[in-house]
Image (tube, rainbow, N blue to C red; front, top):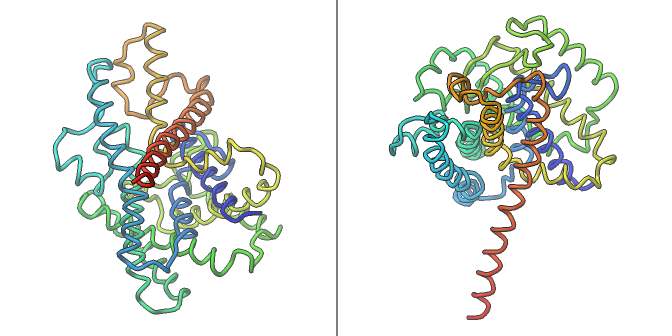
Length: 357
């Protein structure tokens, strides 16, 4: 099985978990999305980390792959938000100024509500740059893992400072470095060398996860979002549980990919989901809100009910949750495919012009 195929499948699962979390249901029973969804993406980034690039080369690549599309989407959603405001009766975001549009992406990522799921991208960019710098410190990877674990625990202990947004980005990276390094070690020291999918390990993970639920103070299993922690705001409910639930969530995700990869190798749409995870992350809230405002309009319900709640509020979750989920995934996946075709068209024309000179 092609290794990149499995990683793409893991990305598909990760973005499906994110979208399910924003609709407040758990795609994987016993493993609620807010207990591991973001850390799974950091883990994937670690798996894909290539140390052979120089620091300057690596920065250029991450700017191109992460920050350029981020700010293109930020500009796009600034226009969408501005245009939609007279229609829906609310401006979904902060005041428009250079500080909010250029600095806040790195501080909170919530300068515009519709783009808020992409807060993760500048956070990932900063953390990867820090991780790249730290690769120049020549100590054993196992020792680095211990150091990064200490930093993650320290970030949890320092969460009281997360209310200061100038500190928030530091605390996010302190917590996340551990999972990037874990992904790097998995790719280079574990995958293909150590069998981590033995039945005994599966049973152990399930038992541990069920015990972790005993620490859950906020939600019932029926709500599907228990054991949550919020890296986005540097908020944790327990000093060790966020790390353990992240590890168990990452393991179950790898396990799922391992057992289904052969079965769905010809399912092209699943591959498309993985390849368009960035576009799904960027656009699913727009789709959800279009659906919500459309339902309210056709039912003759005032938009005030939506505007009085946050950007994630959606109409009648008991009946509509899975419709939102399916519609959001399909629409944003094919929107990503459409953007790729547009990009390919311009690149091909550029190449033809250069060859004709």
